[in-house]
Image (cartoon, rainbow, N blue to C red; front, side, top):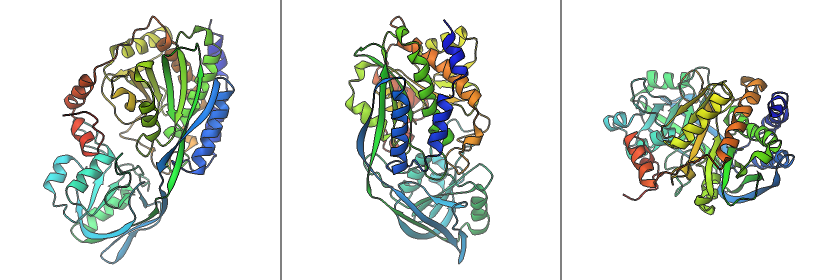
Length: 440
């Protein structure tokens, strides 16, 4: 029966929820806006699923105030279209020699004299480089090299300073002040002031705060569950439409479609919209710590969907997940890109790192890196209802496929996961930022 497909293609449940999320205001982890968005998501899921509720937890709060960069007596950047503090930066004003570390590759930090310097690094990596280097890795390479402050330069044009957190699970507030600057600001800094004295100033507060995960479920009351997840929090400089309002809105649309197909589910499906993803996967790490991971059949994590029309699924080397995804693509005659590579940067990871089969679902997009994400330009106008509905159909079918009792999804040994991270040159970066969970 395919009536559910037609209903999904004409549904406004997901898009209506997305509009509500972006109109909530800031959804920064620990804020009132994040809580309001979580409550709205709970209420939206309650229309289609049972036991909808919130699970609260304490987090390290962080609230933004003004930031600035001065050099050679000139204020280079002070307005938030040019410079913004990176969340969980410590407050402070630091002066040092300006050093340009290029793309922030490990070898560039090794070659530069960063001791007591204000270090700038771009947000992208060169085409020839063999892996993506996350912002936090660049920050902690700078810290290890002795930097007094870190300046993260967007590679995207348009006066868009990038945001994104620093800090580690053990030390949530970072070691040195950190700011993001627009590409144009970074170019001016490097051109005019390299080798000169520069000052980075960050004003912020770090109160205690509370976040929450949203839960609901459908299907039989089995011990084993398929988790369909997203994150409800966003950064405080934009609407957070792409990252990750769209993912949470798609979870709502999938829940509506699965409610019409509940009798087909062999395994319980649990919907989770995590809190505090943007500040270190806090909500998903908490759930993984509290859950018997043997009871998690698979994780289907939606973070970065709807930005482009073709879904891209990172399957982390789980053959069963590749087979399930390809089966859905063939059945619905619709392209889905799969990649077996490791991707340790979203809410599937606290589960996948211990061998639980997990898919990180994104969209194929043009360009490099986050694009509009983590900037003031992450706004609703970049997305289309058509794409949300189309992808909800594919993801609903994939959730049913993963919940099928005949679909075997073998786990991977944690040693295999660790080896894969090492082989894909990801281990060093995870170790630098304190995210490496394995014994030597």
